[in-house]
Length: 292
Image 1 (cartoon, rainbow, N blue to C red):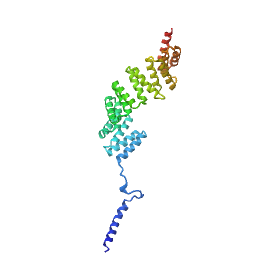
Image 2 (image 1 turned 120 degrees about the vertical axis):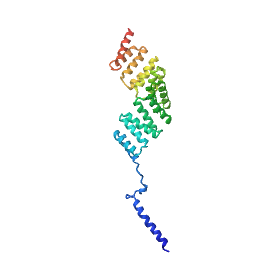
Image 3 (image 1 turned 45 degrees about the vertical axis):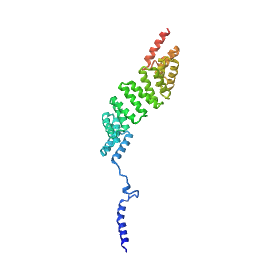
Image 4 (image 1 turned 30 degrees about the vertical axis):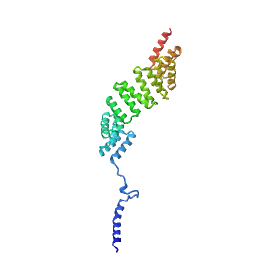
C-alpha cells in the first residue's frame, strides 16, 4: 500500500538536484533561459561602436573577428568595407563590399557604398550600375538619384545626368542641392532658360546659398532679363555681403539697364578680389570706353 508514495518521493528527490544545478546563483534566470551569446554578433557590435567613435582601425579588427566567427555575416563585410573606405583604401573596401553583396544580393546599403567606392576608383560605369540597382530596391531614394546623376556626369553622359537630377527634384521638390547641380549642368549644355528655373528653385529653396542666387542672376542676364537679375543678385548679397561674384553679376544687371554709375560702383567694390578682380577691372575699363 505504501509503494506509490515511495515512488513519488523517489521521483521528487531525483529531480531536485538537477533543478538546483540549473538555478542561476543570482536568482535571475535558469541556465536554459539565458541567451547564448553569438560571438559574430558581439564582435560586429564592437565594430559598430568603434566605427561610431571614428576608430576605424579598431572597427576593422572587430569586423574581421566577426567574420572569422561567421563568414556569412553580410553586415560585418559591409562594416569592413565602410571602414576601409574611411581609411582611404578603396580596393580593399571594394573586395569587402563585393562579398557583402554576394552573401546578401539585396543589401542596398552595401550596393550603394560600393557604387561610391567605384566612383573613388573612377569606375563610373560600375557606379551607374550599382546606383541603378539601389533605385530598383528603393525607387524613391532621392540621394541615390543624386549620386546616379554625378556618376552619369563623370561618365560623360549629360543627358542621363540631367534626367537623374530631374527625377530627384520631382520626388523631392525642396532638394535644393539637386536643383543647383541641375542648373549647372543645364547651363553647361546651353539651356539657359531651364537653368534659370533650376537656379531659382535652388535660391528660393535655401536660406543661405548665395551662389545659387548669383547663378540665377547670371543666367537671367544672359536672357536680358536685367531687372529680375538685379533682384536675384541683391538676394545673393543679402546672404553673403561683399561677395565679388555677386557684385560683378549685379553690375552686369545694372549695366544692362543703362544704370552705368551704379554698375561702376559695384565693379569698383569687386576689383580687389583675387578671383573676380580681373573681371571687374575689365568691366570698368569697357564701361568707361562705352560711355566715352
